[in-house]
Length: 534
Ligand code: G4P
Image (cartoon, rainbow, N blue to C red; front, side, top):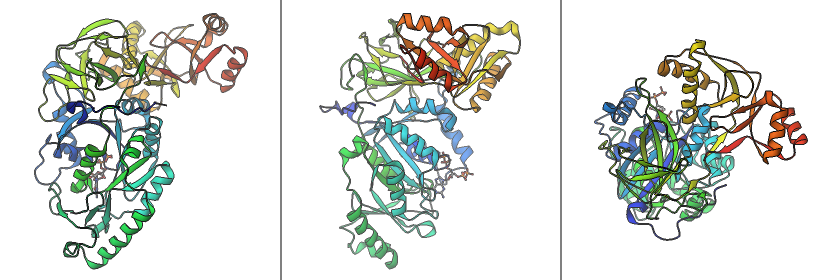
């Protein structure tokens, strides 16, 4: 577990104003819609009138992220930066499909907080729960947005109870909904004593906000019908009695989540949420590393790669490494040390994902996400520094849950297959094992869909038809221990031994019984289902 030491001293203002976060949600809860509204308020996109149909809106979004087209590098909307108020938000996208959970896990190592979006009618759904558990492992602060309040939603107390019980986290209402479904009027802002009214006529229009002097303010009655007003007063009174109070430290410690109610599609509640992320969310946090922790306010620049995306253009072999800046003030052209190879790297054409002006990064501060185009030198887990031999830790690699043999359709092209597979291994899209005995490769993934994606990408990007076939093995474990013990074990089990793409030893098997046997017969050999990427 990450030792969460919050920043001890105040950070320089440029760093302190940064908020780097991800959105976690179950498909369909409204992540895309909320992201679009963030960008809209962040001045990144202008959408006149009604929000367009989903497909079209998605294109709008990916359009501005398709930067550096002339250099042939296309990067999907993996990271977006925008300003709101005094804050600079860095929103890192989490892959939506549950098959890519490892990628998601690593993405969450690059953020300081998460926004959890739930559907007001559905509450906590399976994918939300899974992603939440990942955030919990890192004690990430979580801010909650309960969406779709313009539709029939569950009772407010019921929603809050469900989060508290299913996710074992305290919940404090930041706002309280007034009516729901067709009668949804807006919210009472419990933190700022304001009435926020939703504008149903114009989905992009900023809703009306009325300052109040408490719930008994006569202005309330001018806007809220008597029956709803009475219900609101009763509920808020009860909520104040029964539910935890807002406590910023508890939010930062990951033990309490404030919840805002709204309707992303109607732009309602979004600004309040953004203000909440800015005012209460964490500033860039210290990063765990070996041999020492990195503090964001250190003068020297450090950063680490949490994601690698290969070029989708088959004519180019460039990749973009997504780097989370852990400390310092980076300026374009700086030479950084690539700690794994100990080689200097001039970072001359980094990309900052600033949504509004799409420019090359001239500078970046701790907390920012930077894209570094490269030819494969940068791998997930790599650390960049100004010379010091630091390695960011806590970026795991998980043992795959599904294994298949991979063969080139044309045996003459086996070499190309080697190249293609190592690229995907570097991207973190698959685990690639080279068995000690016999030819070919064994590819491991977390979800079956990934085999299909890989096959079509290898064909598309390398012009190489491949076949995935069932393997005699079903599990993989990394092997470690004293050299002599490991050697003895390897010699006696050659049929089960392979090397992963980093050259590390792996034990392949189909039976848990085998793993138990190894642990019994070779007490000095350790088999593990995760490996730190460094
Ligand atoms: P996701 O990225 O989390 O998967 O969700 P997305 O934003 O795409 O939203 C899923 C659907 O819910 C979309 O409907 C979207 O318009 C709708 N939606 C989002 N926010 C709200 C809200 O506040 N109120 C209501 N009533 N609907 C909302 P869609 O475009 O029709 O797509 P689909 O339902 O056909 O998939």
